[in-house]
Image (tube, rainbow, N blue to C red; front, side, top):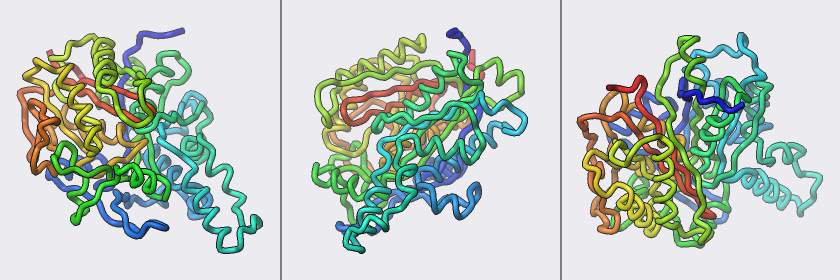
Length: 414
């Protein structure tokens, strides 16, 4: 039976290139502190990347890290931190009523590439192929590793939704709670993309891989001289619950999820469609029972590609044509594009606006591209608007998948 329960966020855990917890992440966003570096990449030399420095051994044994995947370690770290922040003790709840729904862009590339390279050192003798390869590469790996680590016996799977995956994971958990399938949902997205040669080579072949002499200035959404994407790793998972359950157990409530939408461009595998993006945003706003002027902050998807940023801005100008109290910012300018984790991390970076009253800036915009001009685009320094009660999070991906999630302050102000 589908319930009409309100769904709230009661916990979150994250790791990003510039912070391994929400307090550090938020502080660096407000202070304008990015973190992009260079890493060696097989066959390519040095490439720019956003790299996380969390400690996987906080929640895993060395053997588990060695036998598992980077995506799995990221997911486990984020899940453990999320449950801790939600004040949930797994030992005293029904673990069969906990669902794990994690968005991913791709999975398995890293492990297969590494195995092929490894056996190439032995004349491609498959006796040197790891027996851990198959469980490492299956699509549900990250979510499955979480359940193994935490003893969760409820449903788990990953949602492949390209770079819209972080939002898609959250939407899936929202729906499963309303269906009554679970009582707690661990949702969001993770990415291990920086460990895959194919990701970097693919973007480079498309002319979409960022270059810059200063790594921390390479990710520059909306800037006239932007050159492309900085590939990053990371993760962010949330705990979602039905409102009445959260109130009953005295849970900390960070925000309420009030609207969402997913649609498809159906026009091109790579090039975005501004009309479809606008339709997705409008659908989410309608589902939330709001009008465009009711949205106070839009977290943009903008990846720093010339066409992608311009198309999104066209969509935003269409929807928010006469909205003087709507502001716009971008988080990728600090950490690059965390692929499957992007939408979840960017939502997290803006959630504290409800408590501190600030909007973190977009950085690295030296010369604003006229095609990306937006009213109230926050650049260089944080601002404090008169009120921030609603946040709309854009996240779009290849093959024309668009996702939008809307959350509001809790409790709502009159």
